Image (cartoon, rainbow, N blue to C red; front, side, top):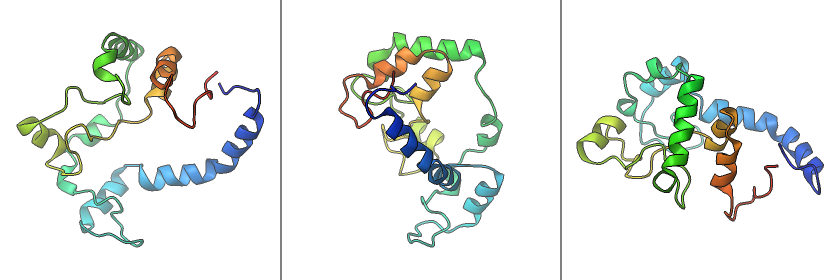
Length: 162
């Protein structure tokens, strides 16, 4: 997937060296399972330090009751295709000049309070982006959407996709 010309080999070596650190980072800071959820429920909020257990100050009441019923679900092939079709059809609304939005239009009022659990960190247009959309595009067989999403943007990753 990476271009092999120029610095491709050097880049792959650097990626290999960082994979252990990246794995730790993802498991430590982004992994949510029953053990992590129990820790969050027992932790204090508004606690900021190197030793804070609740590193991102997640408010337990902001975690919706159905989160674990939802997490194991994966899109079927037909659902993944439909999602990618929708992204292409509604490109200007969903992508435009910004990274792909997970919720469009932005939630407000009662709907925002219901969905975000009143979490002040999730203000209008500031929700978590739901993960790596380019990776989802590639996995669902639509790499052209990933390329289009990053084409023309001044990022340090330009030219990485072959």
